[in-house]
Image (cartoon, rainbow over all chains, first blue to last red; front, side, top):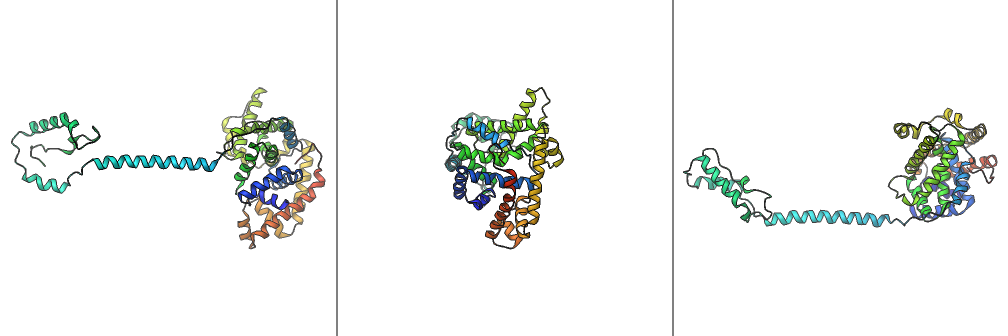
Length: 170
Length: 199
């Protein structure tokens, strides 16, 4: 038994064995004495001791007067599983929202396509400032009817259209 | 399984109503906690009282200990607060938060200081214990002395010690145990097993 106490205090037993030996040590007065003695040896070797022979027995006497404490049994593995599950569910929900928004949004034409189409557009006759202002006003006024954006107001259409100062489309 | 897990196993038992398991934690940490508190309280009788009080408070608060920190870290905070309240109740200056939280308070090595705060009787006893431990250690075969020194002073695992000493882990386990038993055998008659004295 004493070699197991020695191993227990050095942390060299696995969890089930530690639990079993700790239970046996706590029940057996002789084993408790050995446990205390081995710790005294370690503390003395480390010069870490404040010596007071009455301290531990004083605590024991006072402990005997205390009502037994009972704490709800912790289930750490259950808590860890629950925490992991909630994190995973939150991540999954976030991915689903992003995917849903992405699928509802038609793909924008590639820049190259715009560039190819742009030269074929008819030349704009209106003065540049008036045209820009009119188009912007129109887009802002009608953005809520746009079918491109499932989530209104998230990405205003004005950001997708711009005109150079001379009024010719890009 | 490390020190923290061993303590947690004992805390779990104590939380299920096993007072003796808490007693094992008292045996393990009584000297370390008293030594810490001796930094702030000079009188040996007061150190003993405050240390006892801290352990009782820790026992009462055990249902709230969830294991988020190591048991000793938690006990350390209770000890510090108990000492602080004690000093304030006497109208003495309580050390500042910085003094209490300093790393030095936790790890200082000052045998001279401990001599100052021990009673003459305890000082005599502690000297006898230290001499017995050192004499027995010195008389041990080299392989036993090295094994227990690497474990207790350097804090190495059995695996690391086996690697250094070039022997199987089982041999390390046996050497450390034999060294402890040899020293304990010499200490038992010195300490006695009287009811009011427990080491």
